[in-house]
Length: 273
Image (cartoon, rainbow, N blue to C red; front, side):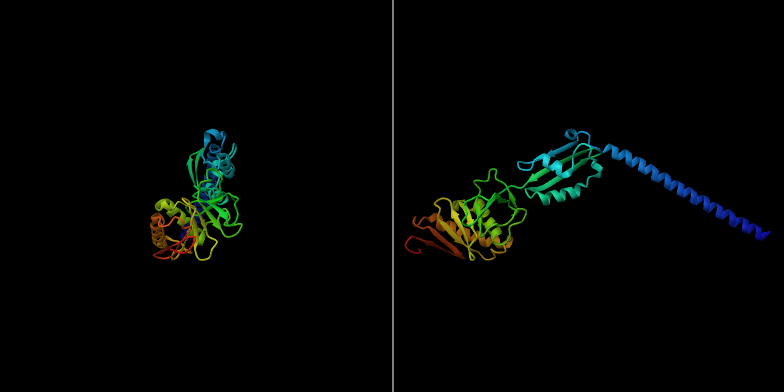
């Protein structure tokens, strides 16, 4: 009798386990069905049916809203829930160097706002010996891109040889040093009125002084690896150059030499001062 009771108990336990397994499977199927159903309803809510009212794009002067809409695939029939906005942002920034930043704000379920921040050109880029404009410019970060609108009055960096730093790249070495030189003249030493920096020479950078179109050859320690640490040395050279230039000891000086720290020489038509 005892053996029969043990067998009956084991059988009942197995039956309960089997029922439990069936219930769990049924629950899992039910949850999966419910999830798919609800997910489908959610996806339906994310479809773009009217781009004008569901998509807001704040563009700039060079990169228009329709370009951004195309790059992100924002059009009627597109589903906002299925767009990988992070990947689209990364790819667009890489493809269009004129753009400095893209901000994306999702307004669930069916709206999105995109703000485009364009790069602001601070210098033009040209080639030594060529008068034509390449259309290349760079912003304060040294990123090179193409822009022709309102850039005619920007100072120029003359690179040694064509094609120069390509768009989408970042200025480095002597070219970046020239950028920092021109920016420092603009912000702190306006008396020099530097309008051009020629980086074709191996030992110094030649800048054109806009007031009288004389030139100054300038060098400072660390200029081929410009950084915040080397900026004080650049500023000291420009400070000494400005003092000598504005003193106007001889209006016949056409070439200034600021390649030796702490010393400025002026080259007249006849001799060095």
